[in-house]
Length: 145
Image (tube, rainbow, N blue to C red; front, side, top):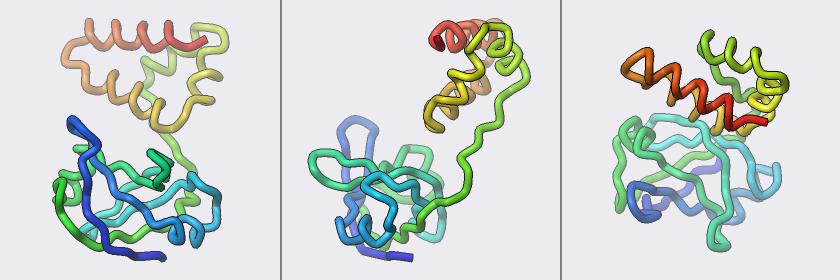
């Protein structure tokens, strides 16, 4: 597993990430945007390499900064591992039922990127009231073809 030293950089606002040396991406052997497991401070999360501004990068979300105990400006060792496990999202029953009720919605949901599916589920799960949850589910279903 490739390990390298880098600094957590700000992407503006509340976004942050790390620059990955091109030789590390090449060593992973799965193209320019491989799925990876990122280990910082002994904690691991899943992500995908992206190309931004001509550089290979991996985001470090606020959630993952909290998980790993890092902040923008920290210099630390990073280990990347090719992530070969399937990317699955547990869909709440009420969201699944609403998707099933609209022809093609379940298929469109399943064809979405794992990050998009995860975001839809987060929106539903974080609703504080049933009314908000129902409204969010309806909005998600409406967005899908």
